[in-house]
Picture 1 (spheres, helix red, strand yellow):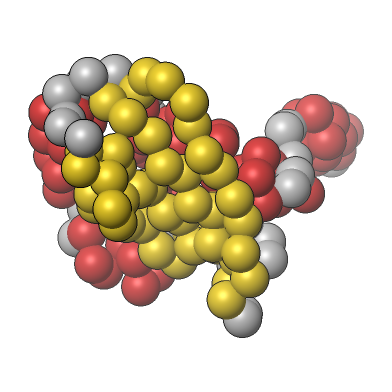
Picture 2: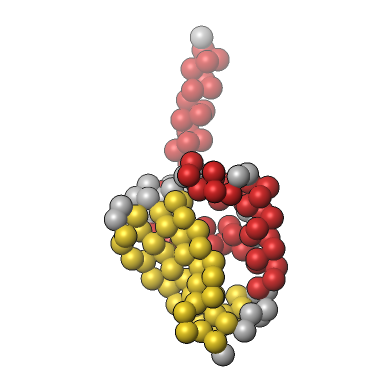
Length: 132
C-alpha cells in the first residue's frame, strides 16, 4: 500500500512540473506549435491534434512525411515575421506570414486551436499577394 501511494504522489508531482501549454496565450501556443513543426517534433504535435485532424493526416508518420517535405523544400524562415491571432468561433487562429530561403513567395502558416490548445487545423500555403 505504501509503494502505491508513493507512485501516486510521484505522478502528481511530475504532472505538477509539466509545462502548461494549454494555459499559455494563443500567440505563444502558435509559436510553440510552429517551433515543433520546424524542429521535426511531430510526436508532440500529434499529441495536440484533435481526433478529426489526426484522421486527416492518418498517422504521425504521414504528418512527418508531409511536413518534412514542405519544410525541407521551403528552407529556413528568414526576415520579418507577421503574426496575429483571430477568433473564428469556437476556435482561435494563429496566422504567421514569413519569407523562406527556398520560396519566391511569402508563406502563410495557420494553426486553428480550441480554447484548451488542441490543434484543430493546419494550413501551409503561399500568402495572398506575396509574389516578389
